[in-house]
Image (cartoon, rainbow, N blue to C red; front, side):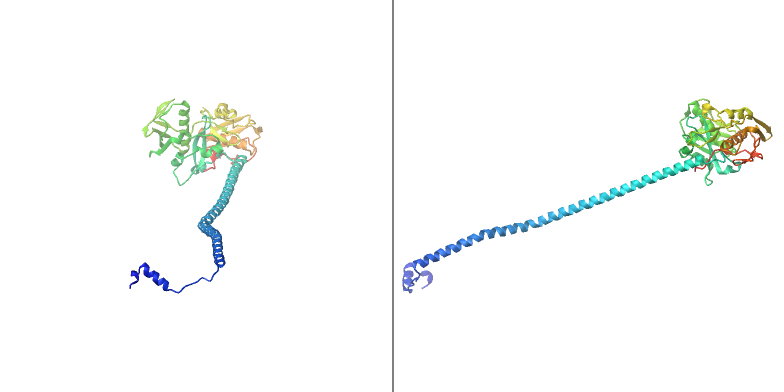
Length: 393
């Protein structure tokens, strides 16, 4: 018979055939056994909940700890970066402050050096206010205009022998010389120069406003031309405006050319902008009929032009005696001339004035000393080439 074919009755019969089994435990033993199992179940339940909570806490801590350490590390790095940045910024500021202090110190030192050089230049006794005839090739002489546009100031500048003189005259910058001379302008700053190929002739091309309408500008511009090119021995200047022939002058009308004379018969006076600038020998704005008239004017000065006298007050009598190319100048015996700056200025102003009237040499008389400045006054002295040498390049 197969197992799956058993019915309920057959199963009962089989169970009856089994041997009998009796539980030897008393009811008390069974009760204690059940009670013990219940207590064990309670104990299991008592420690299981905290254990599960502890495991959960450890699990959560394990999850959060990388974030915590990462945050801590980030904060620490940020703190270190801020500290480093603060240190770097502090160092940079300190370096910048140090650099600024050094720059200020250098600027102050440069300023002091300039002031010392300027003071030395002004306080140093000048042995001459002219360039000798032998120095003609070493200088270029240009005509600046003073601060009040009243005088043309001829100034002799050191020449660059590697460059054409006309190019150097075009490039002259008056700003370079304001420390020594005071406020000045250069009337020819908007003008180009070129040679025509003919001897003693030059062409200038004015690049400024078409009409020099002001009578002051008119005169100053023409005088600047004469006072610049006379020293280069030009005698004729062809005038152009922006490559068109002629310049329209407001006072004197249009001109196509201008005659330049080396002998303008002007007297030389003393000009100085203020006590902190150089003393200059400056020609008079107008010409004089004779050397005597020029010398007499040099005793008085020209107040309206801020031109001071160059003949000393102690010279009460001055005689001029022409002897061909030589001019004899005789001072009164009690003039008290000596080797001083004032005496140098007077004698060299007379020499420059004599040149304006065509004299080549001058013999001074009535001077008790043998030398004044660079001049041996016991012999005839050759007239200078030009006035006011400036050492600044």
